[in-house]
Amino acid sequence: MKLGVTVVVASVCLLAAEAQASSGYGNSLASPSFRYVYVENVRKAFVDAEQSRSYMASHDRELKLRFLEFQTSAEKAIADARKAGTPVGSYDLFLPAVRLQKPADVTKIDRKAYPLNLVLDVSDDKAQAHFEVTATKPWTSAQMTSLTTALRKIATSAPNDNQSEERTKREKAMLDAAAFAVPIAVTHVDDRFALYVGTVTEVASKDRAGLLAALQAKLDKLVPSLRTNLAMKDVTTRLGVTALNPVKKPIDNHPQKLPGAFHPWGPLVSGDLVRMNLAMGNVDVILMIAPKGKYDWGKTSAAMTTILRDAGIADAHRDLIEQEANRLGGERR
Image (tube, rainbow, N blue to C red):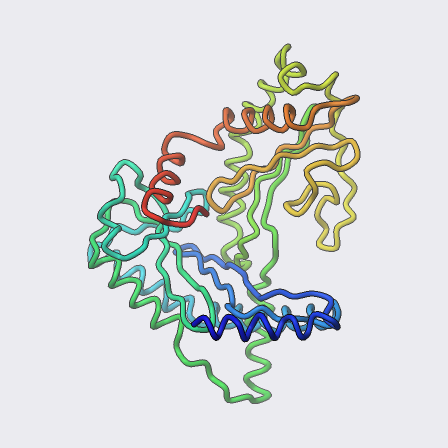
């Protein structure tokens, strides 16, 4: 194992003189029943941006086709597990996930932490890959092992390498119909703030309406609390600002028709705008304000974080899930 790592590092170093960038492909896609995350193990060195884009586009196409091909089987495996007594519900993108060291550790999760998302590891020598499903009640070790085994078999089945014009047309039709897009989000611009609720996990068009409705419901619940909090007399003192300017609707200059200053890849501070991002599971909630005059970023960002938490981004249940993920040696997501 150590030799393999040395070889990879040496290869990267040899290419570094002419390469412009180095990265590996990864993405996440979700259905109503699960979320699938795939990150390839090997990082590639690219001589220019065009080579990088071509590589990523090719791998993105391959992953999405595989996902579309195994999605029905994976959903059936989850439905069969539910019928057999495994307490698994519809996938909840808003819940944090717990990654376990071994299947038996599922019995060590605090019962009060449910419902939560469980990571079912299906990694192989090519990539780190896993499914996330929503566990509504405690699982047994056997249930964890059984569903993980079924999903691993589905996700790692041998690909069909027989190329033909008919297959190419069929795959194009599948991708066109799925119309994956990122991010999936809803936004609101108020007098003193703007709010974004969205995810960079990709969802096929046929499943997007339900997710957008859930995102909109969350945004509608958050807006009144934020409006009240940011209208309090002491809010400028808490934020460490002289005053709050109205948040002007950002100009739509993003290639994907996203507000140029208001999407998940924007900077924390840009021009007259300040942003703070907190996560609800795999959903990003971004609060944007427009401070007037000078301000202390540390004080302002801390206050924005508190305002978001008080609005309901964090709660005792979500905190407990993350504590259990950390306690059991899992990875916070």
